[in-house]
Length: 174
Image (cartoon, rainbow, N blue to C red; front, top):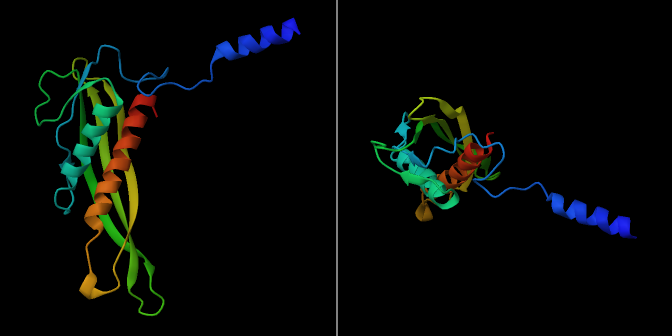
């Protein structure tokens, strides 16, 4: 019985293998980095202000989930690292149609982003993803009299999901 209790105590002291976000074993951001500059992402698409929504979501996610000082500005100033992004593609396509009227009832929004996190002192690339793709579905009203463009709300939701995934990838090294 004594050996069993000792073995159980040893197992309990080993931990479960989970880590607090921002404190992972395989973190790619050096300890010297204490601040991250996030200039407004560039927009290579025709969608108006999508870069501002995505940038704001990324800044918010970094500020709430990490210990880094985050500076959202065109000039990263004296930050230790800089996260640059470019919205490379934006599309909204119908994916579900009403069988009677053959009008679209659901559309899918797809946004592609290119991101790179650079250590400003060493110029070393800490994280890079050249094709970060996110999708979000939204409903399309079948009545023209009650039509409301849901794509803006879909961009907001997509931006939050993209930012959460991006920050997770940066913190975990994926």
